[in-house]
Structure formats: structure tokens, C-alpha cells
Length: 295
Image (cartoon, rainbow, N blue to C red; front, side):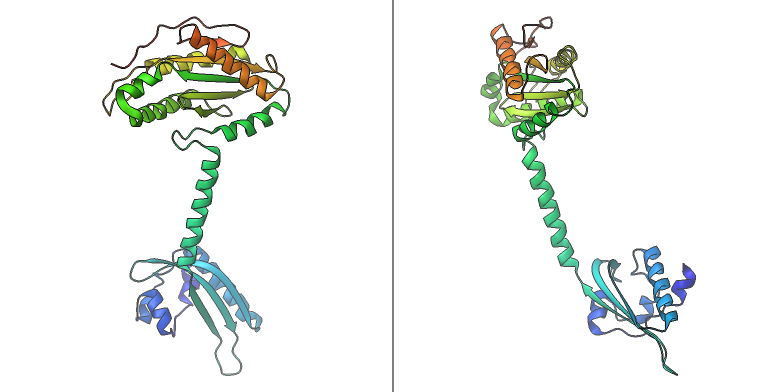
């Protein structure tokens, strides 16, 4: 690599290039401090030498990052023309650099914006969990896939209105965020959590039958009951949650029915005294002792 670089020497540079590199010292440029990717630069030098050996005029174009002698990074579009010598005239290589830093920054900003838009099209802005749009699209695809079982869990916080009335809407939103984190800590892909409505969540368990989904609901119920909420902003708050579970294809033959049955099981769990896990068809896990309400 060093051998190739020793064969390169900057012999002239116009004022615009001097400004780009933030120097008027040609000798300083020959130390190649502006090269950020020396392996790629060496490959370019090797290619240029091959072009010189052919005795034909050749050109190359590519984007690169440089580091100015002032320590700033710039993005450039480099157009290099190789002109072989004739007779006593030496061969020369002319490189024109176009500063495309602002264009690259705009492209990166646009890419980040597109990624953010895509994220928000599928995720809930408050919790980071998936949203209902994703739920309906993904679940419909899962049920049409290969006949493997798929369970859904509806979860709803008990007496959440009391939290909001006691600590305010902002802290209520913080509790929702914390609940989402607790749920996410219990599951792993391909399972996913959905911020369904208010303080209600849906957990989709691809490949899980109803028995296993009931056990997962029990795990989430226990984690929520053991968690202390709002410890940093005026708590502590202890909560409980109720759950409804349904499975495909045992309970339902389509997505709408599956979701409706899980929601109905949740509603019955709330009617029966909260802090319960009920499945479509009436099966239930043993009732937990309710964790309590806000102090």
C-alpha cells in the first residue's frame, strides 16, 4: 500500500480545491492526511496505473469521503481522467472534485425521515409497540400461512382510571409506557405486542396453542403485579391486569372472530372481579390476589 502511495504526488491545485481541502500547502496534501479510506485510495491508484499502462485515455468516477486539513469531513464526487504521455510529454492524471456534502446530508436526512415514517406506520408512538394497523395486516397473514396454531392475548389494566385521576394524564401515559416495557420483556420473536387502545394491549403468539398462551398470560400478569410503577415521578404505583385468551384454529376460523373471542374473554374476566385470566370457552387460570391500587 505504501509503495503505491509513494508514486502519487499532487503537483497543482486550483483555488476551489484549496478551499475544499482547507489548505494552500501542496506538500501537506502529499502526506495523504485527507484520505479516510487508505485501502480504497490505494486500489484507485493501482487502477490508474493500469490505465496508464494501456496507453489509452481513460476515466473513472466515484464518491468518496475526505478529511480536510482543517479536520472536517466532506463528501466528494471524484472524476479522474488519465492522459498518457506522447513523446517527451509526461503522462498526467487530472482529478476534478465536486463537493456533494450537502447533497449527502440531505439524502441521509430523507432516508432517516423515510425510516421514521415507516416505523410510525407500524408502531405506536407512545409505547413503541406495534399498532393496530400492523396487527390486522400481520395476523391476517399469519392465519393464512401454514395452519400452525396462533394465540392472541388481550390484556387490560385494572382500575387504570384511578391512576389517571390520582397522578394525571401525563403520568398515566408513563405507566402505559412502563407496562409496554414489562410486556416486551416477557416475549420474544416471532411473538409481538400491540398497543390496542388506551391501557389495553394485544399479544400475538404465532405457533403457540391456548394452553401455552394461558401460561404466558400468567407470566405477564405476575410481572405487572410485581412491578412498581412511577418510581421516578411520584409513585410508587402497583397495578394488576386482566387477560382474555383465544387460539386459532381451535376457537375461531378467521381473524375477526379470534380477536372478538379474546376480547370477550377479557370482558368476562373484568366482570368476574378483575386480575383474572380467562380463555375463550371458559377455561381460567387460578385467580391472583390483586396487587392493589394507587396510594
